[in-house]
Each structure stands twice: as structure tokens, then as C-alpha cells.
Length: 567
Ligand code: PEP
Ligand code: MG
Image (cartoon, rainbow, N blue to C red; front, side, top):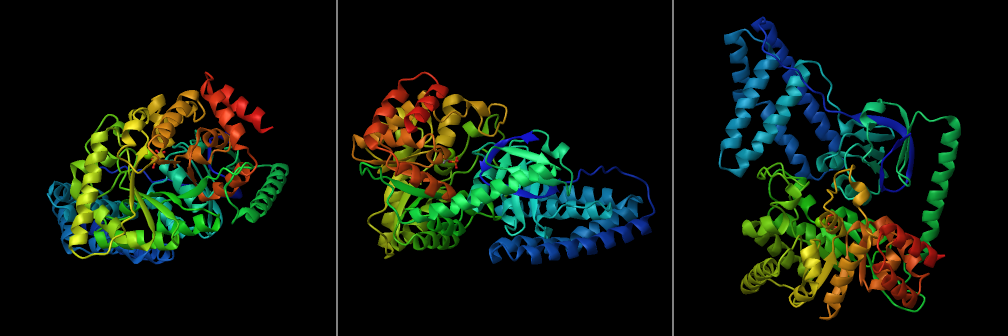
């Protein structure tokens, strides 16, 4: 049994698919040139065939745009310049094909990377990808391919990148287990939006699990069992059945109000990463989208998405929600979210560095394009826009001014825009929570991002499993910051949501309710359980509970108090 962090709930019994990138050991060796050129050509032919096959399989999951990256790779693999240089080197120096492929590949990569042009910089990533595949084929080393999975598996990996998760076919990938990550790392967030059970931050899972081992993934308690006994398997089959039955039973609450027994109503919304996730929110009774993380639009491609591409995505989400509120967050890139076509500066602490609104105010054309696309889409529903990682009132004012400018430009161009767009901000930096009463003079609403708010308040990296014990949503220090934010907003008649993972935490919800939170936004699958809970609570009692909780001195005491009150 291995222990990790339950990141997306559920149970799975399946086989292990181990995702491990091979490490190549390439050295310069003297060799027969003729034979090496033959090897190179055979490997090249296989490389082209491999890419074509991956493209074909991926076409079931990806859009035409997302598939374009494979065409770029095919073009690269058939580029006479690249291949010619490798052959030349083998011939002239009588050396091994893998070394020639590596040397020429590296040269091309540095050449593209040094160009002051985004298009060519992207090509560097393509060369890396293609020459890696080529070298593996020369050396007869197999590369794991997520799109080739055709039986039910649990993917076991060091970590999963957004492009890995984009390739996962939900029909066969029943869960995943990773060594890296915490409840709020992006692979965990993706798992929840795909509704795939996941356990993350499992020490040694790569060492212990072998390809094709039988595995039980208990993503409720954060456990992994390898090659379980028949008895344990039976136990988990029963748990799985009960889990499904409970999910079914909650469906009676799909259209019910999210209100307490004394008729205090709140809004339960869903967090999404892509337009595809809207369906999950609607099917789980979401009353809106409380957080659309737009960075996935930027992460799943090989260039900044243009205004038209963004407009289409935003329109789809607004239309999909059918007039219900949609809160779109502007680009929150940096930290653990990188782009393969944009170079971030090397920083000691990227989570404290050049990211989100800081980057967008420094490179405002990126923000302007996104805001134009959003404002144009605003006529298709009820749009709220929010800026991530706001630390100072001045940052908010600058971002809001850019919004006003782009809106005025569009109006002047004769484009139809909604006059009801709300412009708010995320409260995820303690400075903003403390100064909420001042921010509330300018922002239409707040959405509390507890994933970051907790990491910054506790000075505990959300990606580190070693310090994950400091992720304490119910610590009175965090509750006080939440209270300050809500009180500051309410004093100016503004509403407050929460879109961090804490909003869907069943022990936190009673306290948040009592503190006066107006909107709770969470993974779609948490909406119905939270509605059931809220409908069982009294607002008057929860207000009392919240007052007591903020006066305690540690998280355990708060948890105990909540449990006692709920009994
Ligand atoms: C948060 O920080 O709580 C949040 C919702 O944003 P993200 O998890 O995308 O950083
Ligand atoms: Mg955040």
C-alpha cells in the first residue's frame, strides 16, 4: 500500500500503464558510415509512421487545431535540410547515427531558439520532439504513447503535463497516480475537470509499480494498492458500487435551490478549464461557472491563441451556460503553468515571480487580445471578468483601465457589447485580503483563490508533498483572511465568491456559509454533495459557528468544532 493525496475522488481497479520517458545515453563512436546511414533512414521512416499513427489515434480526442502540432512534426521529419546534414556528418566523420542525429538536432534547436521570432522559437520545440523520437528509433528504444492505450488502465507517472492529459482517452484511462503534485496542482485540477479519479504526491510509486501490475486506486482516502489480494479486491468492488449508488441518489437535487433551512440562499457554481467542461457543470446542477481557467487555451497549443480562437471558446462557454453567470479569469500563466512557445525568465521562486497579471501588465498586448475576445463574446450570456494575482489597488486599476479602453474601442468600431459585464478580481494574495475594503471600492466582485491564498499565507509551496501538511484551509488565520475579504466586499455592496478547492470542502462549507460567502465554485462533481449539505444547515447557527471558529487557535480545533456542530 502506498499513500498519497486524493485529488479527484472515486475508486478504480485496473492495470498499471507506466508513463516513463526513456533516458538516452548517446556518445560519439567510430562506425561504418554506410550502415549508419541505412540505420538513420530506417529510423526516419519509422518516425514518420509513428507520428502519423499518433495523429490518427489522437484525432478522436483533439480538435483540428490541436492536431496541427503533429503536421508540424511530420514536416520536420521529412525536412531534407535536417536529414541531409545528419547524413553528411555520418559520411564525413564515420560516426554513429544517434550521435549525428543528436548533434544536428541540438544545432537546429539553438539556431531556432536564438531567433527573435515566435514562429521560429516554436519550431525549436518541434525539432526537439522529432529528433528525440528519431534517436529512440535509431537505438530501438520504445517511447510510451498515451494515445495507444486501448485497455482500461491507471496511468502511473512522475507527473502529467497538460498536453499529456489532453491525450488521455477517458474511455480507457480510468485514473491516474503521480509522484509529484498536491490537491491544487494543475494535474489534480485537470483530473477533477475530466472527472477521472486521481491520487497525487505518492512517494516511490514509479519505483514500486510495474507496467501491467494490477492496481487499486482509492482516490477517496488517497491510497494505492499494487497487486492486491482477492479479498481486498472484493472489498473495493463493494466500495465502488456504493460510491456510484450515492452519486445516483444525489441527482434528485439537480434543480433544487442551494438554500439553508432558514432560507438563506447561496450560489453553487463549477470550475472549468475548457469549453468541454461546461457539460459537466450543467449535468451536475451548477448555477453558473465561478472560474474559467483560460490558461488551458494557451497551454494546449504551440502559439498564443488569436482573438478569433479565443472569441469562439468564450462564446461556446457563455452559450453553453444559457444565460447563467460565467466568471472568466484572464490569463494566469507562470508558477507551475508554462507555455512551450514562451520563455519565462529563470527565477528562484517562480510562484512568487513573473506571472499572471504581473506578466499581462508588462506585455499588455496579450491582455488586450484576450479582453477584446471576451468583450465581443459578452453578448452571448452573463459575463464576469476577473484578474488573477492582484496584489495592489494600482494593479487592479491598470487592468480595469485596459478593459475600459478595449471596450470603448470595440464600441467605436460598431461591435455589439454587453453593458452588464462585471469586472472583479481574485483575492489570492494575503495583501489583497487584508486590504479588501479598499479594493472593494473599485472591483465589482471578489473571488477568493484559496489554493494560492493558503500557499502564500503559510509560505508552503502547493506543489510540494513534503509541506502539504501546511495546506490548512480551516486554520483560523485563513478563516480570518476570508472573513476580512467578505466583510470588506459587503461593506461596499459587492459579492464574494470562492473558487479555490476550499469551496468544495465539506468541512469548510459550513464555516464559509456562516462567514457570509455568496458564491461557492468547485469541481463539478462536488456541487451536488455541497448542495445536500447546505440544505441541511441553519444559516443562523452557521454564523455562530463561524464566529467561534475564527476565535480558535489551530485547525484541528476548528475541525472538531465543525464536526460537533454538524452532529
Ligand atoms: C486559486 O489559487 O485558488 C485558484 C483558484 O487559482 P489556481 O488554482 O488556478 O491558481
Ligand atoms: Mg491561483
